[in-house]
Length: 365
Ligand SMILES: *[C@@H]1O[C@H](CO)[C@@H](O)[C@H](O)[C@H]1NC(C)=O
Ligand SMILES: *[C@@H]1O[C@H](CO)[C@@H](O)[C@H](O)[C@H]1NC(C)=O
Ligand SMILES: *[C@@H]1O[C@H](CO)[C@@H](O)[C@H](O)[C@H]1NC(C)=O
Ligand SMILES: *[C@@H]1O[C@H](CO)[C@@H](O)[C@H](O)[C@H]1NC(C)=O
Image: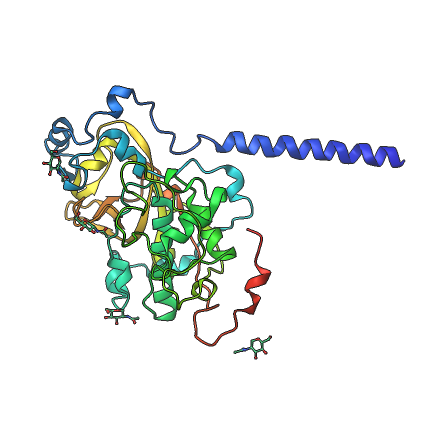
């Protein structure tokens, strides 16, 4: 009887192991699997006359292409490095809820929505940042959306730290400047919190030890200390209360942004996207270079009657439409409607004089 019991446990253990391996295998390469690019391709310039021509001469394109200054001297390999959304292992989503919204909210949704004007007191929503040369988009999209959500919920101006996430989340979030998983960023906010940009800035004032500096673009080290001596790391932490995926229906995505503020989205980037200047983007030409994450802040319909999403990128204002772009809405263009993640901010540590003594209880991810 005892033997039988033991045997049974071993089978269960083997079964679980096999199941875990299966999840890992399934998870790899399902999304954002970039095309295999030749060395010759990787060392050639990302911006090409031929692509600009092909897009601008296509009457059905719906958008304009140009030589964006931001990538003036970038090779395909340097551009690819910015696309830091790695294929998320399926098990990173274990236990992550999928949020959908009640039909009664959908009925109230406006035809056009821009979070910058809906919450005009929150200047962070319209901020355009620059990820440098580091594949940290997965962290930017998350930190920027969470900063906006703090302002929307608690009426406070705040910039949270990309560096904290990049340096201190470790392998659970991926590989720092070599790419990561958007959903894991939100789980980090929930379990470990994130300090302010003031405490742990992205670009440091010595010039070139920040992420994105040539030639090494290293992932920053996790120091867990504010640069300013009179700020405490633990007290600077701001937390999320939840981390979730938003159901892929456009109505659910709109309801989520309308109710709680900007969300982080991931999508596939093709060569033509580097040339985006204005209008409603859809993929026209070029190879699949990789997965990218940004912040979705609204939606609308163009003069030509094309439904779009409105997004803030973090490639500075010398890329795209002053740093922003629009992409076709409702057809899962480049997978954008299938990679929406977010979370809600927590009031813990937000109001001065509150107790932070429960910090020590948080240790597991
Ligand atoms: C690109 O490189 C050229 C030649 O090296 C230089 O003159 C130009 O200023 C560079 N442009 C940018 C935007 O860095
Ligand atoms: C955007 O680019 C300009 C010019 O290269 C640079 O001075 C500025 O610091 C960049 N913005 C950010 C947020 O890094
Ligand atoms: C945030 O800062 C901006 C500019 O300094 C200010 O106009 C706005 O009222 C502030 N918002 C909040 C919620 O404090
Ligand atoms: C914080 O917690 C300590 C110990 O539990 C308690 O004595 C103190 O009154 C609390 N402070 C506040 C501001 O709640």
